[in-house]
Image 1 (cartoon, rainbow, N blue to C red):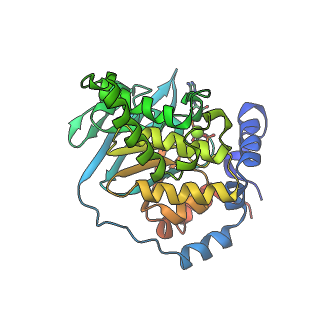
Image 2: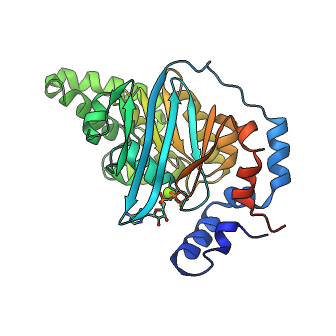
Length: 301
Ligand SMILES: Nc1ncnc2c1ncn2[C@@H]1O[C@H](COP(=O)(O)OP(=O)(O)OP(=O)(O)O)[C@@H](O)[C@H]1O
Ligand SMILES: [Mg+2]
């Protein structure tokens, strides 16, 4: 069984990206190849929204990004509701990362608008939206490898406070920060790793540290890019539970390839294909949408 988009780019860099990707994401690959399993899962698992959709936190209107004439994200109008865990999925090259980078302000759109709680944030910089409570989870590489786990979280707390005032420079406030840092480590299950250098953490635990440093910034909306990338089963389950836990009282938007994560914890899913929204809704609905199955499985079978 071949994917449509795989057929159209069997050689060259795109094909290389697809095969590398399939090797890196076995569960995603199995999603490609098991339409029946997908439908069965969908019938069995009817994830219900944890909250009734109410307030719109983030909205895009006609969001478009071109790279020298190539349209990677095209006219995407998207709505994110408060309290939801919302996953963005789609085949390779669908525009997920580009869309994510637009939302996190790492890229400027060619056209369209991004509204956060009704305010136009299209022209703002990442630090400016972070101050408003929109925080992109930092990449693992952004942690300081030779500082301890506790020190990494403390620095994140200092960054947050540093934008407001400098009381943290006193001895006493350092203790206060340590207490808060330990609380955050407990939230992500890292309390027993507090004094270990970050570089020594097992891979799956590094993501928990990254989430703790994100929580230190007290986000209302957390944006996660492939939170379970490169992880084994056990770590995936832990990160899945962790995302659910930290999502309480917050909104989470994630780009995620692992369908077990998407189906288990998402309230809503947006499927992108060739830069456009192909489908949107709860997993049970979206996974049975013939257009989505077609996009993932191709039609030649
Ligand atoms: N900086 C860039 N310059 C030119 N083209 C780009 C750039 N960034 C992305 N693209 C192209 O835009 C399209 C969407 O890429 P993007 O990385 O957003 O897809 P994706 O859905 O994240 O894919 P994957 O599942 O492989 O991570 C691809 O065809 C890609 O080659
Ligand atoms: Mg990507």
